[in-house]
Structure formats: C-alpha cells, structure tokens
Image (cartoon, rainbow, N blue to C red; front, side, top):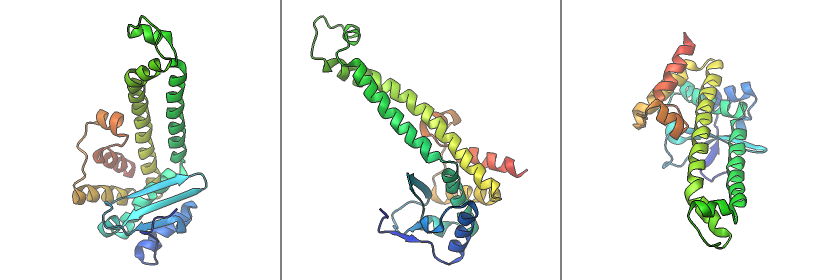
Length: 215
C-alpha cells in the first residue's frame, strides 16, 4: 500500500535524472516516489518485499541536494535493491524468530535451567522458559544483533560501491557531506561502536572509502 503522501517522479530535472539511472540498472522508474510529508527527515530509502520494491525520496532531501547529487543518493538505494540486501534482512528476521522459539521449546520444563537457578522442587514447565527469556535471551540477542549490524554495515559499503560503479562517486561523496552539514546529523561514533551497535558506517568512513575509489 502506497502512503497518501507519496507521489511519482515528475518530468523535471530531478525526475529525468533519477529515471535515467533507474532505467540503466533495470529498476522501474514508476516505483520511485517523492514523499511530500514535510515532517519526514531528509533522506531516501529502499523498501522491498517479495514482488514489491520501491524507493522513496523525501521532499527535504530533494530540496537539499542538486539533481545529480540526489541521483547519486538514489543510486545507493538502487545498490541495496540490485544486490538483494532485503533478502538478507528477511533471513535475519526469520533466523531471530527461529532462535527465540527454539530456545523456548528447548527450555520448556528444562531441569538444567531450574538447577542453575537453585530450584529444589519442580515448578510449572513454563518457569524455565520465563527465566531463559529474561536472563539468557538478552545475551543471545545482543550477539545476534552485533553480527547482524556488521552485515548491515557491509551492505552499506556495498551499496556505495554500486553507486560508484555507475560513475557517481564524487556526487555521492558530496551529497553525504552536504547532508551531514545541513541536517546536523554527523554521527560522531567510534568505528567499532558503529560497526557493532549501529549497523551503519560513519559519514567519514563512507567518504574516505568513496574518495579512495576515485583515485
């Protein structure tokens, strides 16, 4: 379902430039929308479900960047589509859910869990499940989230590479720096912190990597 605030690309400079790069890589231009919601922060994102893919550009981003800079930002999102990063997200979601219910099944009435917590009598079989969710699952989840974040970080670099391969390295670098400066969203995070907790490289890391590809 398309939000009421979404509208298709027009035939202005932005629309023609974005449509051209979308057609170049085989993405349907009619699946790229402008979000007219004035409250939406400056950005662009790819959303993909089985058989349904779309890219959304917010009005604030359109006003912030030049047509070619905006095209480079869309090229980054096209990289997520072309390299099927959404499938990785689906798999991660299924794996996380499977791990959770697998743990619940394994700990239902588990005497080993009860011994760890000092039970001398056998309580209801659900008690070990509750204890595992409260004490063990956060450890598993933090480990899973960290690995997932590292994969997401790699996907961001991969999408940058895709835009660079389309000849938009300089424009992508400039758009990142401009967005960071104008929106005050420059992420001052340690490299390890951004890799394990955020799942997204810092602006400086992306800019350095893109700049190295231009040499």
